[in-house]
Length: 449
Image (cartoon, rainbow, N blue to C red; front, side, top):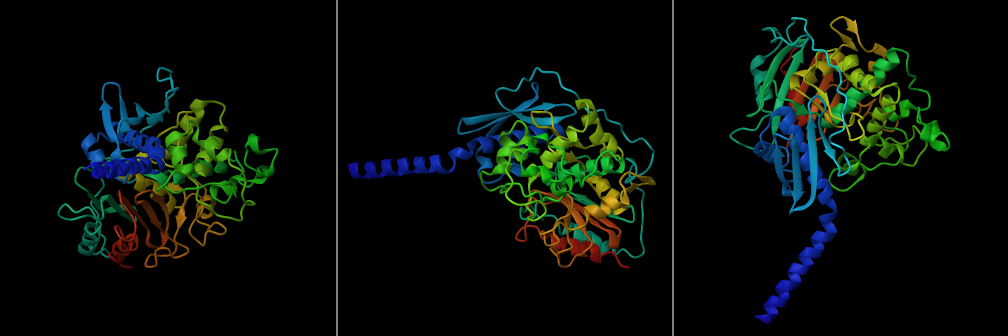
C-alpha cells in the first residue's frame, strides 16, 4: 500500500510539473481569449453564455476557462482553475476590450460618429429586404444543394458553418444560416478586418493625403535601418520585421491580442530581420501598426474614430459593423471587426466593382488593382491585406478570385470573372473539416455562362 501511495504521489507531482511547464504559462492567454470572446459575443450579438462556450470557446485549452457575465456592469470575467482571472468590458459603440488591472474604467471615452444609410433601396445597396430575382442561367436547385452542403446535417459538428451569402450581378441569390443565427447576427470576421484597414488607406491615398511608396511615417524608426520601410511594404506584409504568428502556441500574435495595451506598438518595437520587400511574412502585428500609423495621421482621436466609418464602413451601409479598440484607443485593425454576413458581402461588392459603390467612386480603381497584385515572395497568395488565388491555392476556382480571410474559416470571396461575391462564416476551416475549394466550386458551377 505504501509503495502504491508513493507511486501515486510521484504521478501527481509529475502531472503538476507537466502542467506547470506546459499549460500554466498559457493561462493568461486562455482566460484572456475567453473573457474577450464572451464579452464581445454576448454584448455585441446578444449570444447567451452557453452558446458562446459551446460554439465560440470550444477550442483546445480555451475550453478550460470558467466564464461569467455581469449584465448590469457590462463585463465578462474568465479564469482557469481559479487562476489568471481576466476581465473584458463592453462599451456601447466601441464593443468589448480586454483590460488589465491598471485600466481606468471610469475614464470618459469618445465614440465614433455614425451615419446610417437611409436610401430606401433594397439590399445590397440599401438596408431594405432584397428584391426577388431570377436568372435564367442560374441552376437554383444546384445552388441550393451547394449552399446546404456547406452546413452540418442532423446535429453534426464537422463543418460548423454559420452563414452563407451569395451575390450574383448585384443580387442576393442564396442565403442560409445555422441554428441560432440569422440575417441580423453580428459575426466576428477576425483577420477579414485587415481588408477594412487596407481600405482606409485606400481612401487616404485617393484623397492625396498619403503616399504609400514613401517611408512609413514612424518617428521611432528614423535612426536605424527600419527608416527605409514603406507603407507599401507594410500593406503587403513584406516589411522584413521580426514576427511570429502561430495561434496554437504562445507567440507574438497571441501575446499582442490578449496581453498588450497598445497593439500597434508591439510590431513597431520589433527589429528588422530582412531588407524590405524581400521576405513575405504574414503578421497581424503589421496591420495593427498600420492602424496606429493611421491614427497618427489625424489631429484628434475623434477624427480618427470617425474616419473608419465615414470613409468606408457607413459609406456602403455596413451599419452593423463595429471595429473594436485596444486599451490605448487604437482600432484592432488586424482582427476585431464584427458585422452581419450581409454587411460583409457589401464590402466584397465594393471591391467587385473596383471601388465603385452604386455610382460613387469610394476607392480608385487603381487601388483595387494594387490590392490584387501579388506581393513579392508570396507565391501569388497575398496582395495588400487581401488574399489571392493567383497562385492556385483553390485549384477549381478562378485565378482572379481575391478574398478576405479570417481565423476559423471566415471568407468574403470576390470573383470578378463570375460577377460574384460569396461569404462564408463559421468556426472551422481546413480540408478535413471545411473544404473551401469544393464549396466555391459547387456554388460557381450552379451559375452558367
